[in-house]
Amino acid sequence: MEQEERDEEKRALEALLGLEDLAEKKIKIFSRLLMDTGIAKQMEELSLRHEKRKESLAVFLGQKPKKKAVEQKSEENKQ
Image (cartoon, rainbow, N blue to C red; front, side, top):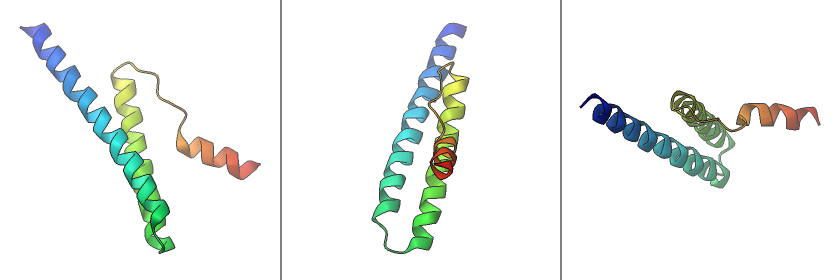
């Protein structure tokens, strides 16, 4: 019984991880299509928040998170 509950919770968290991934990707694409730079910047920030939640869920589930976009952007700015 207890194992079934844990499995169900894990499946729910994995589903949430997939939704966060999808939201991040869709918002990132949408932000690139916008002509208003202010709104595009807000959408990019929203995408980063989804990415952070996705990384937190991945760590919680024992998965290795991918390189953070924030780190990637800072590396790009240095070059």
